Length: 355
Length: 226
Ligand SMILES: Nc1ncnc2c1ncn2[C@@H]1O[C@H](COP(=O)(O)OP(=O)(O)OP(=O)(O)O)[C@@H](O)[C@H]1O
Ligand SMILES: [Mg+2]
Image 1 (spheres, protein in one colour):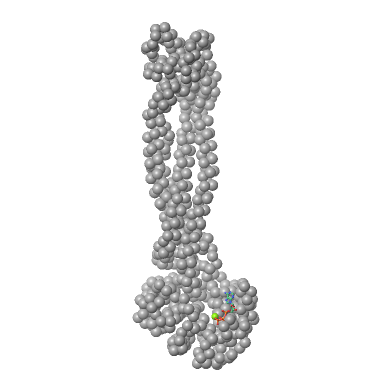
Image 2 (tube, each protein chain N blue to C red):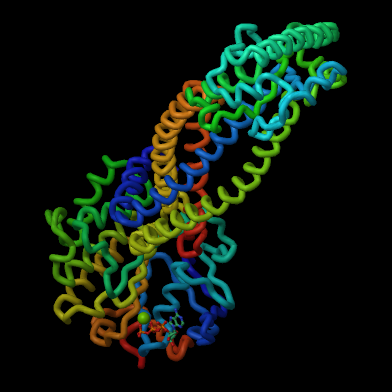
């Protein structure tokens, strides 16, 4: 094969694509659709992976407190409280009352009493006791080796924060005034290695109900991406197969359209490579064009979806496009190239093409 | 010896035995008529000789080498030394005379400068000087066959096979074409031509191979044998 022969081979491939008009368009679109879906899926997977990894690196341990902090004195009071607060919440804590009265200020502040004097005084007393209890719990937590800091987050703060992370919704109002969140301590470990041990120790504290840290979430996310990968591979194989079939049909048509020329080439002694290369190139062009189209579409979709996610659920990590576009381009174009080569190899294996 | 066949036989996939036990030899520079009734196996023999089909028994020796043992590279070289024309011309209909002839040089990867020089020269040789830019479909049958001959000989083949090249032409045009074949042969190209036209065979005092029902029944110099 002479280099100068490409002056014939390359234009020949383009001519054939034009000549095959409709089939060319159908093949390119099939490749575009399958590569768009494959690439979109792949981007979804690497983003979920990145989120899982971020959670994995999280040094936070969350200790959710029991609604009813066990303490002899406290228990007595809990029994004294009327059960009629509705909302199905145990009535012992002041928060339960604030559920009846949505505009209530943060409960830990003593100024909270705006109601009847007797109840107000009881509340004030309760809150003082609670604050003391929280201080005790905090000391217990800080005593655990490896704990860097520890912050109390009341259920009121919790629901506000959660609402803002979902794009500034007033979650409490949405939930009809109820607050399903418990109070909690957010504990920072000094290193990720300590997290599990700290969680274990914290869970031994009596007032602590449940302890959460990244582990479960990470496993769930990785399990999710694993499942997605398996489903994804199956879907991708099917889509790739469709693309290969369409390319093969297009090339087959191109071969049939040039049957006479191929015969003449054989008679005069053209090499196998010279006869086949224009068709192989046509397949490669189809694959690359489809890949390019898919890449442009997927990048546009990614930027838009990323912007939308960032403005609605701010805690989700969306990988920056500048960081991944090169990899994405490589993935999509290489896939297009491979599909193109595979698709054209089948019709070119025909004995009719042999010298 | 250019070509030699040893008990050559061809049985097609449908079971028809088109040729059996053909022994013949063709020397450099010969002009050979291949005659026989329709279905005798003339086209089959030609297809075997230029390797469009492979023999089902026996051998073809080309310059002493068995044609079945040729490598891809040898086949390409053999084809470059072989020209072929057919009754139905087999030109690329949408293209010009120039493109049809130039295609044979492009296909063997000759440089463009050379193609531009050689195409007008070969067209002159076949009597179509200055007709480069005409569409082949606008030419007469005789002229179309000349384009096909130009394409077959532009690579200066050692041997030219012609399968009933005058089959679709009137007697006058046929004789003009035979004149061209004779010239090509006199310039050194070996020529094997299948025909069932008695007048043509009788008009030239050449070697005649006669096939009947797939067998070679006569091999002699001078007119029609049947
Ligand atoms: N490709 C093929 N497949 C099957 N049988 C074939 C094929 N080509 C030719 N034949 C058969 O082989 C026999 C010889 O055919 P061939 O074409 O060689 O004869 P021919 O002498 O060229 O005839 P004609 O003068 O009509 O061209 C015939 O019986 C024909 O039907
Ligand atoms: Mg015939």
